[in-house]
Image (cartoon, rainbow over all chains, first blue to last red; front, side, top):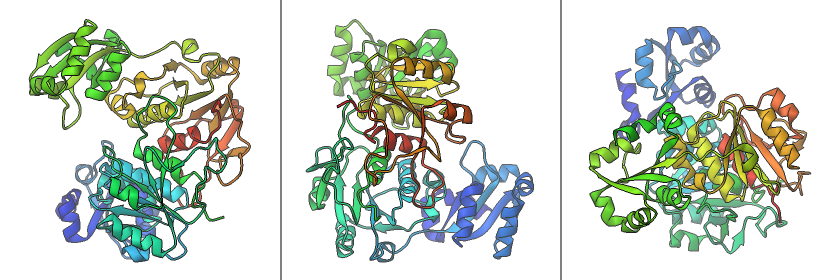
Length: 256
Length: 256
């Protein structure tokens, strides 16, 4: 329990190779993925979620009863759900995450906000993406806020890390994906009022940049196309998770 | 300054008719909209943002120097920008917000998370929407998190409140808009891989529901169509701000 509380910190997660998963839905997904090592649950939660406890016990997961107060320390939300699991990190090696038949991949370059990363992972899952790649200094996907924002999708598709964009781009090209960088001005425009918008159909990798700075000129230039989302009103730009939703649901990259 | 700190609370905002706007970009937009009553700024920020101070002074806005510590109390972010304004509430009466020629409107029904509301306001602005309507128990758009997530868009398009969905729907129909409720299963599907998806072109109002519960059966039934976003992976649903981005950028409702 004391060791588990430390997993709120990235260094402790890397050292132990585990992270915290909070809430009955996310814990259910982590269990289904075979990643749970230990389950902490309060007395009142045991009554509500007896199925979960039975599922955990049936695969040999250790179940520990904890006080409400301990659950609060393990959780990060203001209304702690009383169910927190210690699970193995979900990192998948890059070349295993991008399968040869991948049709749609989301690439996050230096995304800083864990809520944005988690929301994009959830959207990528919903859009039928094959993988999500976190490049360079992107946020740790095992951060509690990212885990919660992903609403279980963290366990649904492979999440890989790449040290630099070049490494990710080389593999994506090897797998035959067209690389689309989202930029303010593009050589292509994602305009739903224009038929097709000239976007490639599949397979594609969408690349999204940092919240404040966007993609670097180098990354934009290294992509096959730069795609702009039209801004019709007076907003300067879109939130990156909103932009990702528009792109991942644009129909580009969907294998029919 | 003491009175201004109280504006972190909704009750104080309603009583005074003012709210806090944090950061140079948002304050610039609030000034441009003619809503700023008072500007608090630190000595170091005065040097960096002398244009802003001059702009405020030129329209008769009172400028108060504050300490870094006072700025921290006025701000809500961990790295306070040193610039915080007191601005008049942006609420616009419903029948003024929805102009007769409105082509695209976003309707938020009981949206609870201020970050989601702010992001949807920003996306609606970017997509060229004419107004955003907050229905019923939706979050206060003047909440600090909503203001920050809107990235200035709060000041770009009219934001109105409606006590109930019926009131909003009646006015939207009177203005000739087709009302599209976003639901898990729809009589229409927003599928970019299908040409047109059968969505009406313009003018339309998109209706988005609460993060946890979605739209009530009554609201869904009262809309002209229920539109589903296809879920291709294993996610149960999309984050509401991501869903709003997909819908508002679907091309439905855009006047060409």
